[in-house]
Picture 1 (cartoon, rainbow, N blue to C red):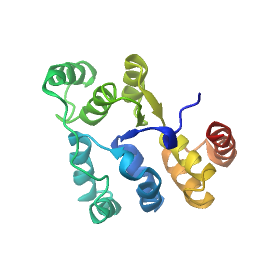
Picture 2 (picture 1 turned 180 degrees about the vertical axis):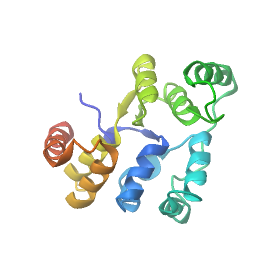
Picture 3 (picture 1 turned 30 degrees about the vertical axis):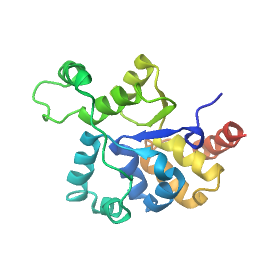
Picture 4 (picture 1 turned 135 degrees about the horizontal axis):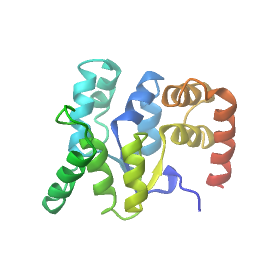
Length: 186
């Protein structure tokens, strides 16, 4: 079965999906579509606060919505050493001390949560999801799914897709992704 967010019990998001949805003005439809199934780890919550106070003030919408609901999830103590080792292994010399924390914590936690899905675009995150057997969607795939399911209008969905993909990808790839999402949704 093809992975879709609509069927996931828990959807753990990294920072990048929030930024792409914010750039397209589609945070409210995202919150409505995922509802209480959406969750973030503490490191992602910190990144979102930092970005809301800086380059992406649209992210303050999340605070106004009080979404994702509940407290950000912390890594269990037994995973902290694993997270630190992965961060040291995958962070270049001189990288910011928080580099890759959100991606690593999200994947490690998702591997422990039954029926969890991760929405993440980062290359390291994608690699960790594959290595840990964690289901993952890209932000672009989630936007296409939401259009296919009627969770967001086509123009907003394309705005998210366009923000989340390289400039050369374009409208035909979006249309194809929506068709694939309709098939996956059944």
